[in-house]
Length: 172
Image (tube, rainbow, N blue to C red; front, top):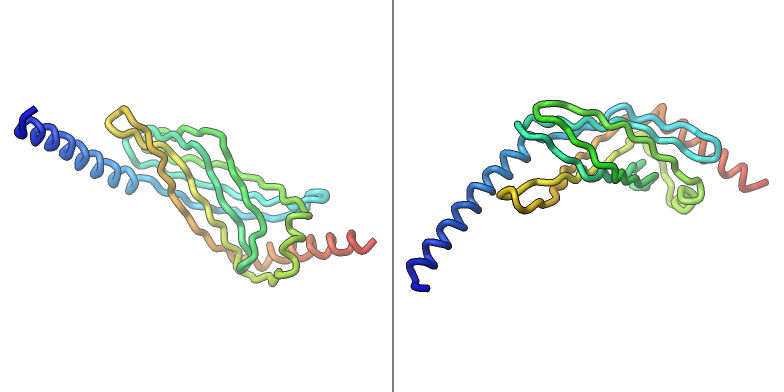
C-alpha cells in the first residue's frame, strides 16, 4: 500500500476514535448514582446492613449494569464489603433503585476490633460497573464511583451494642 492509503485509513480510525470518545464522555455525564436509607441492625449472630442505591440514567439508551461493589466504613475501620453480580438493565431516561442487604459475619468484624475507634460518621463507598458499547462491536466496562457519608449517631449505637454483644458472647 502506498502512503496516501495508509494516511486515509489512519484518518478514518482517528475520526471514529474522536466520535466514540465524545460519545463516551457524554454517556458518563448522563449517569449518576446515589445511596440513601442506610440501616444497621442485629440479625441473630450477624449484623444486617441495608441501604438503597439509586441509579439515574438520563441517556437515550438502556444501560446494562454488570455488578455493584462497595465497602462501609466507620471512621477508618472497614465494617463490611459487598459485591452484587446480578445483571440489571435500566431503561433509557429512567431511575432505578437497587435494594442492598449485607450480612456481616461477627468473626470478620472482630478482626478489626483491636483498631476499632467508632465515629459518628459512616462512609459508604460504591462502584457500579456497566458496559459501554464502542462502535457496536466492542463492550468495555465502566465504573461509576460514589462516596456517601451518613451521620451515624443512631446507627452507631446499634453497632456498639452489636460489638458489645459479641464481646460478651466470647467471654462466656
